[in-house]
Image (cartoon, rainbow, N blue to C red):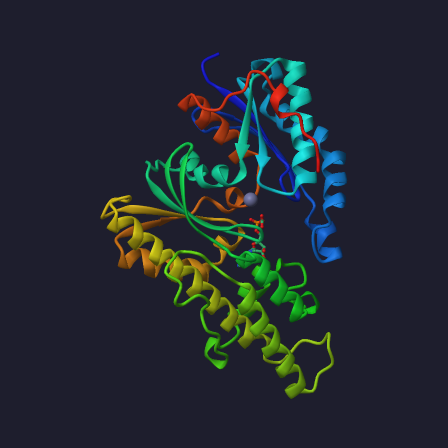
Length: 356
Ligand code: KG4
Ligand code: ZN
């Protein structure tokens, strides 16, 4: 066969996803099953529920990705699967399914680190050379890393508590935006972005967290508590019952979005300066890749652009469908690892999966 072909399988959180990608980055087939609707009803992911849903869908999703691709399983070069980090029960479903398939098809297995896959996705769509900086911001992720090679990452900063998307989701729930006629079907972060357009960010003032911390870490829990208190106080002032939407909800959303953007931009600015001072990044035209669900927020992107413009960097984002969890990025990471001659297991005996 001319090209390397990798089947990628992803089950680290609440999406069951699979894809077949070739060596040049062509996506030959993909399939995804999202559990978001179920988890929205329970107000968060319940791991055994996620596990059950992965079990119910994985066979069909992998089959669908393969049949869309028209690739015969025997033509695959390898099977790549997320093994960490993520919810143990969810990861286990993808891993044990993959190991069965590996045994059946007698194919090499490529264990994939979920964060590395997110970070390398940009190289599937754009010609980005190492080293580059990556900012991953979603409901479950928050980190800044220098990507020096396919498997050479320097972690520069991470959230000490929750991720920004998690905070936005919590604030959106606290504001009862699910009852808002315009936002009822949106994720928390998207609802905040939508409402913020109708609000004035200057009507509320929140302080950016960790102003004095001389590192590139993040924190959102303290901010979330301050926002919570502000909402409680406003509810009293406006004399509304819990569960109703504040008349100042749009102003709060605008201020929350603003402070989230400021905090993320400030930590990213530090990371860029840190890398440049140590010649870890080129002085001009360094690339900052921003990915994850929160990266689709245009206000946050614009704020980050101010930072990249001021530091002679270029801001790049993978297309939205590749910013969130998917099988393509796992398959692509498999291709990258194959090409770099890295981490291929021909014998999977060592990684039998035992949930804790
Ligand atoms: O990457 P993703 O789909 O899933 C994981 O968290 O792994 O990200 C989802 C997160 C949610 O917290 C959601 O509220 C947030 O991304 N999000 C946004 C926007 N769209 C989704 N946050 C801010 N602005 C948006 N437009
Ligand atoms: Zn992810």
